[in-house]
Image 1 (tube, rainbow over the protein chains, first blue to last red):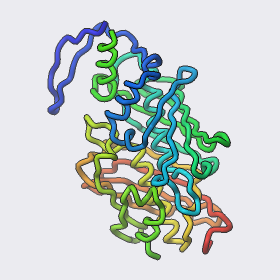
Image 2 (image 1 turned 60 degrees about the vertical axis):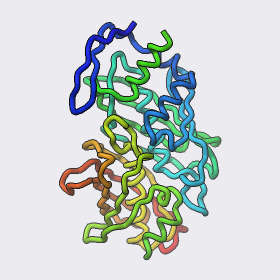
Image 3 (image 1 turned 90 degrees about the horizontal axis):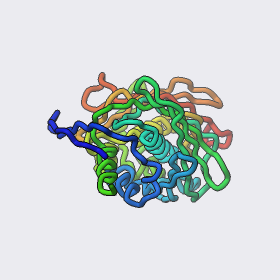
Image 4 (image 1 turned 180 degrees about the vertical axis):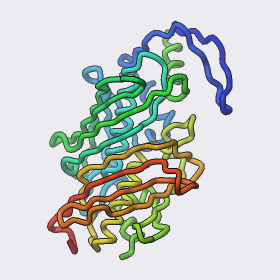
Length: 180
Length: 138
C-alpha cells in the first residue's frame, strides 16, 4: 500500500511525500500494455520512436521498428546511429527504474556508444539494457543493440538519481494504485 | 560544399531539422529548433538526451564531410557524451563542432552543445570516425 501524506509546490510543480513505499513491481508491470502506453505517453520522444517493450531475464528489452525517416541515406538504408543512441539511452533509463528500491527520477550523466558495425539495411533493432549497480546515487548501466545478424553496438551509461522528483515514475505509481 | 544539401540527403538529419548557421575558425555551428517530439521529460520540459546525442553525431559527421570534401557520412566508431545540464525545450540547441584529429584512417571530432549562453554547456561529446577507403575524396 502506498500512502500519500501531503503535497507541496516547488517551482510551480506539485510534489508529494510518500511513506510506507514498497519496492515497485515494474517487472510485472512491463508486460502490461498500460506501461508501454505510459512510457510513450509521458515522453513525446519515446512516442516518436514507436518504442515497443518486452522483458526478458528481469531486464527491459526495447524494440525499434525500421523507419525510413530515421535511416542513414539512400545508399545505406539502415537506422542511423543517432536513433540507436537514443534508444539505448531510453532503455538504460528504464533499466534503472526497474532496479530502484525507492521513488526517484533520473537524468543521464554520461553515455558512451561503440558502434561495432552498421545495423542491417531496413532492419528493426533490439536493445537489451542491464543495470549493473546503483552506488552513491549513481546508476551504472550497460546495453547491447542487435539486429537479425547479432550485436552491432554496445553502450555504457551513467545516470544520476534525483529522489523526490516527479516524472514517469509518478505516473507508474498511479498505475500501481489503480491495480491494487 | 553545400552542407544543407547533404543534410537533405540524410533522412535522419533531415527529419531532425538541423540547420547550418555558422562556419568559423573552430568548425561549424548547427542549430536545432525545439519541437514537442524532442521532449524526453515533460515535467522538466527538456530535450531527450538521445536527441542531443544524435544531433551532435550528425553535426560532427557533417563537419568531417565538409572538411574532407566527402559525400558519404564517415562510419562512427564511438561517441562519448557527457550531459552537463538540462536542455530546455523552450530554446534552440546549438552545436559547435571541432576536428581534433584529422587522420588518414581515423578522424576525431569534438562537439559542444549550448542554448542561449555559449559559455553554459548543456552537453559535450567526443567521437571517432573511420574513413572508409572507398569514401569519395578521402
